[in-house]
Image 1 (cartoon, one colour):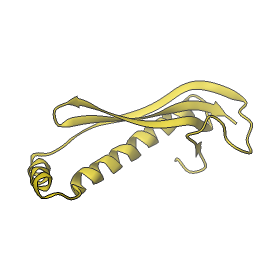
Image 2 (cartoon, rainbow, N blue to C red):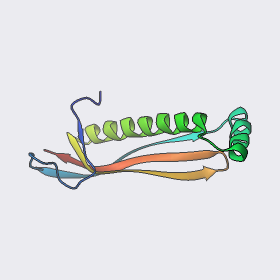
Image 3 (tube, rainbow, N blue to C red):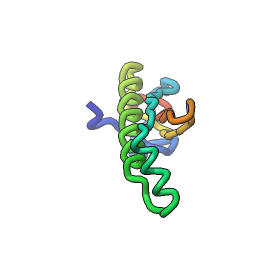
Image 4 (cartoon, helix red, strand yellow):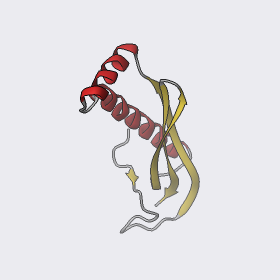
Length: 107
């Protein structure tokens, strides 16, 4: 699905000419933590170290938001995305949104 789809953080794609800018494309997901993970995370805050369950949750969230952005870009006729970024924000206590966005283009 996302193979052979170019996504770059720069405003241009080397060796390609941008034929058309199609506007903002985006994908997002909202994820919540669970009580068990929160208890373990509080313990980790005391003793230090990586909170692996949260790291895995963020990786999965970024992947889902990224895939949804590409679906949005393809639905608008894009075959690449420039100026790609991730943004994270808290929605409510225990739930966060991960947003992937950029500019859909035809190359």
